[in-house]
Image (cartoon, rainbow, N blue to C red; front, side, top):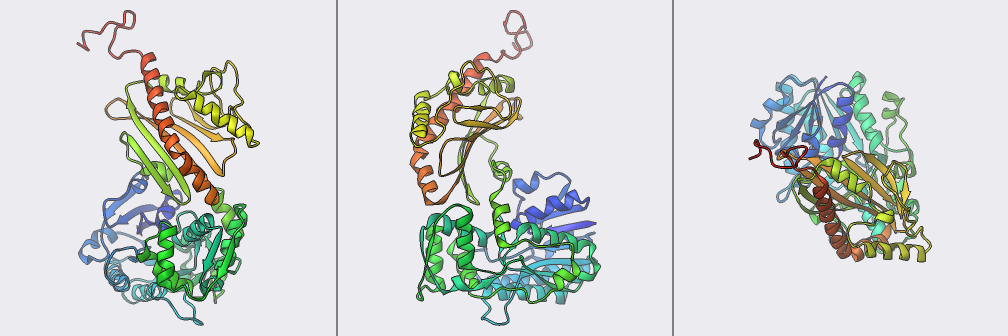
Length: 490
């Protein structure tokens, strides 16, 4: 099918597009501005810039499309009334899709309770579906509660609060019941709807296999991370005060946190069995299984890597519970020379820069019961699954990439990655990335306590690596025997 994914750079859209491509569909990714690199880097995707708030920009986006995934939500936009913007965007988009002959819209909204006050956020999601249904082609509307997965705003709130606060003062909404669903299950429903004609015109509530409270979700997350947490309920925290507190503790802006918190006071439970009737092959997992899937992620994170600038510099990224310190340098050394030097790091060869500090770290690790600095004498190269000092070779691509996982005792998980990327100028961009997934508040304190030392060490290490590799790289355009410059180079 020819499929348009609106909100293509959003959380769900960016994960849906690769699945659609793998299934053989022709995919158009729609964004309001120039697409960010994670989407632009995907092959076989048509990119289109359009704004649902500007009706005149939509005709080109929906032309020739069979099915549209509507994944637009304006709550993150600054200023104004996000409810009014949602209604305008839905009306414009539905009208354009109908006029273009689109067969169907598939929309992901939120479950709305009939037994408690509905927040402005959830009401907006419900009325968006009603607007799409009124003005557009046949609609398949999925309604979900909290989506569990790395990058989901609601789940990141739970992660940040639980990781950073051993003791939490909580408002009454922590006992509100909800039915969280894993992102993998959400994507399964969205994909299955393409082949299910019976889902046309239907509103389908989807949720996980377990019913939780926000208190139980935080405590179960803490248990999965090996943390002990205490939650103390108080009756005086209003949504406004809670949003300010979340802004202080988490990276979520108050403008987003407050509508979300108001929504947390609403019970979000599936009241219909339609999902299991229409999609019997999909068996959503419970919350604890969803957490396990979320925490067992692959690091280094490719999405973070793709979003980094391809220019020299020092960059820091904090995203979805991952900290990444990146240093990028351009060099005239060849990839082979660079990798040859990298493959000799550690062991009896040392670390090119501040080797004494590396030794001290190894001594400290042994003192606290870790592996210490187990140096391997006379090592000349590295292979996958090798161990040396306090590192394990997790990934290795000759002349391209080396990933070392830390075997030392740290409050979290740590990796050191080196990547070599050829540049249009003919030079090589050397990227050294220190990745860390902190566990609890101690993990954050550990990272920031060592951060000044990391800046010093990794800057010196990358510069020393390039200098040594340049010294052994054959000069370009030189006579292969004498080393003298050739006439062409002169």
